[in-house]
Amino acid sequence: MSNLARIVTDPLVCHGQPVVRGLRYPVTMVLELLASGMTSEEVLADYPDLEPEDLTAVLQYAALAVGPRHSLPFDAA
Image 1: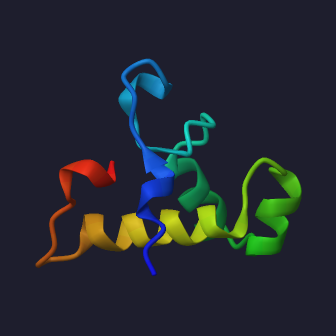
Image 2: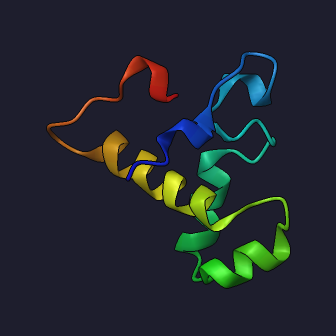
């Protein structure tokens, strides 16, 4: 099941960067936390507004963004 609906863009929020549910947590920031070695549990503990499904959505978004044969649907971001 896709959680991509949790990733949104709004020109008035974080300069239009993709964010998690409009919470001002840019996808790139969450990815950097996970890439730095933080576990999902640590990220969720440090950012209590985030939910496990948000982390899944961030990873799904990133996978689509870098995938060689995929494009992002207009309504996904």
